[in-house]
Length: 174
Ligand code: SF4
Image (cartoon, rainbow, N blue to C red):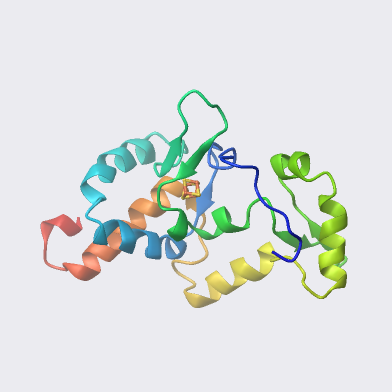
């Protein structure tokens, strides 16, 4: 927000990557929302199918028909960490210097993105850093918060964990 950078309207190119990864911990708020909306039965067959077939398009992505590269997340407010950081977040390089990791659409959309990045840093509003957030997730729960899985598998694991917690003696928890 300090940098004033934003994604191009309707851009869904990061969700169209077949390599989105998340930890199970990050998917728990999402899994809880899916369960509370009773949306799980519609999603599970898709999740099973995509999880079995390896890293494919995220099951929550809703592409805009006829507009390649455009679409939206059907559970945007509950998306995992990488979906929040990608495109904007920075990192510390080996020398400890902050550097941006902008995605191509942001670079195209904001040709002055590098300048904005450095202005935000100089105003003591540094960008979110990948390392910091992944460390925070890992320290919350080293079992569920460290292993990166293809996003569909992470969502499936998150759902089955919550279902097991809610109904420990039910077949539905399998
Ligand atoms: S969880 Fe949402 S934001 Fe993340 S890849 Fe899937 S559709 Fe995109």
